[in-house]
Amino acid sequence: MNETALRVREKFLKLFKENPLIVRSPGRINLIGEHTDYNMGFVLPAAIDKSIYFALTPRDDNNCFLHAFDLNDSYQHQVSNIEYQEKRWANYLLGVIDQLKIFGYNISGFNCVFGGNIPIGAGLSSSAAIEAGLAFSLNHIFNLGIEKLELVKLSQKAENQFVGVNCGIMDQFINIFGKASKVIKIDCRSLDYTYYPFDNNNFKIVLVNTLIHHSLASSEYNSRRMQCESGVKILQNYFPNVKSLRDITSSSLNQVEAKFDKIIYNRCKYIVDEIERVNFACRDLINNDFLSFGKKMYETHFGLSKDYEVSCSELDYLVDQTVEKDYVFGARMMGGGFGGCTLNLVASDCINEFEKEIVYEYKKKYSLIPEIYVCEIANGTNIISDTSN
Image (tube, rainbow, N blue to C red):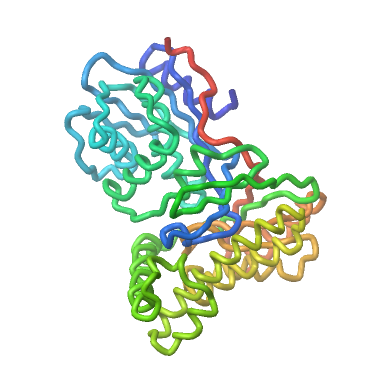
């Protein structure tokens, strides 16, 4: 059990004087396939070794006691009385309880302490780690018998319907299904999935946190989704079988470019190109061709920045700094946009050089020292200790 998990466990013991279940719930990265999930396309994420840890025990009554370790903040409520709260962190947990009730699962109250080392606002999906981690934990302590895919769907609905963010299914899916040294190509329409190898000693995955959290992120996310839906409606006038941007090719989209508002066209163009890019990137992984894979990462970034317009000057600057570095295989912004992290594939023997140069350049430009995280691809949500019985 690592240091973070031990601290969460110790806090639980101090508060409740009983031995808890300990569950690890990971953050995620997405190598290729950004904003394609809600367009029924393909994504290529992986679970990572930055995680949220839960300590839980069931109660005999209807009361729930939730404690956010990193915030040193608590919230109490009854299972039968779930309402949206001004205490925003609580809503990610309450949404899961709400969905369990909607799905017809009966649970009693429980005690819970959670905390971790996923940087908040960095685009590593701490929200899905909280939602899916709690769903997984409650499924275990109450013996609900919920299958993995249903846990994914339930957790996504918690964010859609209770928290109010209209996210796709990728984040919750990789949280539950992740495997060490593997990425998963997920078909966001059928939910079929395939594991691909992503284990190469020649490079490391390095995240650079801009420390920028623009308030545009949530509203613009929902706006992009509506713009894509508008594009689908236009396409259906010429291609009746199109149900989502998944169903159109780049060449067919180009044929009707004149029928589009330029902004809507650019949004659709990025998504269609990105869906195709995921498929080609998977071939690169089969061939162990990380040079080609890295080039596609750059293509993704430039599409997100110019066509989808969800980047920001800080993200663009960090990616631009890597283009001439021959020890960087690929780089791009990651996540919903408007801040957060860039994802970089960096030669293993050049990590220190990369960190030194990036910190120097970013500090000189923005008077900020970016946070650097070297990540390993890890397993999905799992039990690390169960002494609760």
